[in-house]
Image (tube, rainbow, N blue to C red; front, side, top):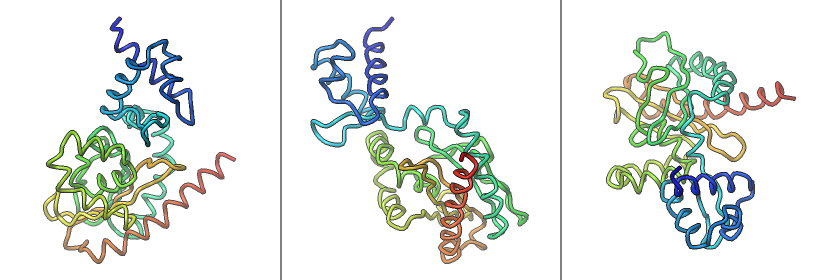
Length: 241
């Protein structure tokens, strides 16, 4: 048993047991550690992106990084795919272009589902495939709602982050992200964030040849996706009730 690893997980479990967050003193007591050791462990977990402390001296809460590790294989993702697949079909029917559903996994996104258009285009990302968060429309849409991921990528990949920080901020302002043949040659994409409550859960993207999807067409498609997403959530709520 590695003691430092054991202690780190004790702290993660203690934070998870406190939905509104936990203070340093409470976590130290829960793990039977002195405050200095607890603070150092929490600082490491925060640097790694597993916990966050919004204000100095404030409570510690978990980020979504642990959940991200299980993305694509969890029951929650199966349910998300089931709920949103009809919406992907609707968007593809309306736009005539391929539609994707993706979730973040570390520094990448994972394609959970897709509906391929009848118009010629091989899938740029197959179901189960992964692409970077940085430099892609789907990645920027996901990052626009995940400040914890932004902070971690800015630390891990500072040069790459610097080149896309403006695009992520623009996606946050606009409510959608664009990629005009930047990541895949001759392929353009528009992506919109999917929220579950107050958590950025996934992104839906529409991609196709730039000849069919110039910038103005992508901007027309963005509100179609935005309108379709609430319909999916209201449908899910009706099913659960």
